[in-house]
Length: 284
Image 1 (cartoon, helix red, strand yellow):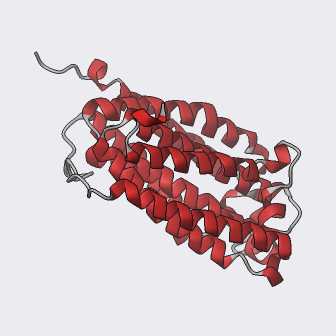
Image 2 (cartoon, one colour):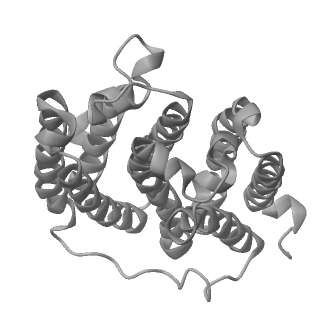
Image 3 (tube, helix red, strand yellow):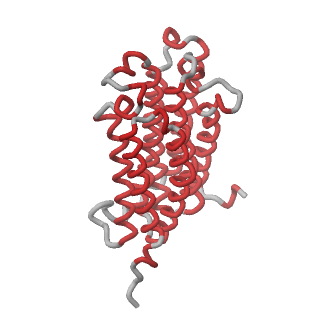
């Protein structure tokens, strides 16, 4: 069966397999294994750390689905951009592993986990580069200026919502604003630095999830964009919203309401993108 796939498809499937392997690390406490904070930081789990690792695991799960979707459903132009983006993500994760691999910081077991993660990431980068050996096709359009239809426009709205939330990690103090236990700017950073450290992994995963939308805007055909919007509707409705609702008790009420509004906008935008032909039929 694998013989039927191109080299590009194979490297995307290989990255998906590695992502699936690491999913167990994020959800270890749910399946009788060490929690993410224990495995990668040598620290016991708590509610805040569990929240960060849950969202990181969900981001990795969606990224795994994105890789499968790109490999099995998308055109070569999209696959090339996903492969290139994933290589950059590998470099990002290699730096993250290097930052947290100190044996003095986490102990021998944590050090080994980060060394193994760094080695696998580096090896995968060399393998994935083979998928781009023949170069890349030009992008079909500018992701913003190339907007000529309802599907593309609605995907831009969805991309912008995610972009805003991701940048709040870099430009603000999202944890202190979002969680009741973190009220008071910098409180969680001083009291529980591991919680912030886990969010490094979490924001890295969701960065790539949003990049997938960017690649679809650049090189996906109209039909590919509609199919992608339908698939992403499922991930938002079945995965992200339930996790957000499960954390209502620990979330600042105003921020929870903002989250509900943001998720509603995302779902509406994706629905309009997926069913744009029914909303605005093309002229005969």
